[in-house]
Image 1: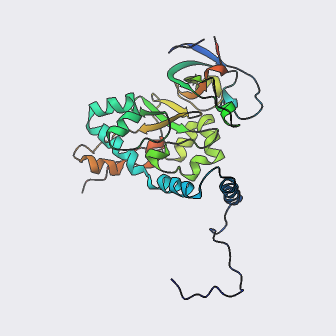
Image 2 (image 1 turned 90 degrees about the vertical axis):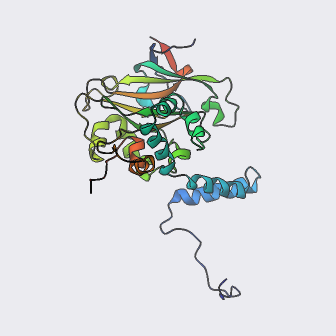
Image 3 (image 1 turned 90 degrees about the horizontal axis):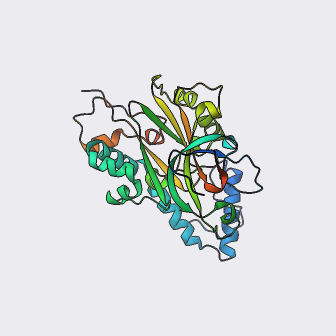
Amino acid sequence: MSDHDHDHDHPHDPITADGDPPAAARARALEGLLVEKGVVEREDVRRNIDRLVSRSPADGARLVARAWVDPDFKQRLLADAREAALEAGLDPGPSPVVVAVENTETVHHMVVCTLCSCYPRALLGPPPDWYKSLPYRSRAVSDPHGVLAEFGVELDDDVELRVLDSTADVRYLVVPRRPAGSEELSEPELAELVTRDSMIGVAQPVAPARA
Amino acid sequence: MTFELGDRVRVADRAHEGHHRTPGYVKGKSGRVERVFGSFTNPETRAYGGDGLPEQVLYQVCFDQEELWPSTRRHARDATCVDIFEHWLEAE
């Protein structure tokens, strides 16, 4: 503890991040009211926030890397991603249905939630800010090739682009294509190639240049 | 009425006061059922403290990109797939 004496009368700034957006103040006010009315316990809110931020794209990347090296696991992942995540020791989260879709030479999937920010948080952690932004949410469906180009992805003309709008209870995880040149890598090394954006479908994993 | 894989369906073109999960850009549009996810509580009543019953069957409906955004840059077989509850779908 500091030797800072609080028996004094100079004002303290509230504990908030710089430039806290109005939404943060609103969330704090809502939480305060819900706690006051006994709807939620403050400790439950903390625990849930901790659980949410403990997840990261590394979790989803483990599933992808295993699917790349184990065709049987890939089949199980594509058939039922909830069960496959449990099998791999991961918590697939509260959504009743988790669907994994595979990007191939002929089809490319990308995921959006046009209505809000639905996202497989249990497997990827919190979504990036751009995923929640209005420009992504609208243009991912109205101009998906344009959005992909901005992320640096150009699909060949014969590739079918499928945009998945997760509007309801289903969460989608993209299994990106295994990059050429990654044949010698181990499963953990492969997992390191799998980026968050590639599991949303707006990027493609790249193998490291050979030393 | 329950739809099956491959069925052609049209999304009801109706307004809805309050929370609902059917995006405006597919209302009135024609697509095909590609997945049947099972039955889930209805978010339109659950959002207001209701029990969401009766449950509604949830489908993945895929729309040709040409049907949704005819003037956008696209490849021949591009599609957008949206998860839609049964009470928003009509047989075509």
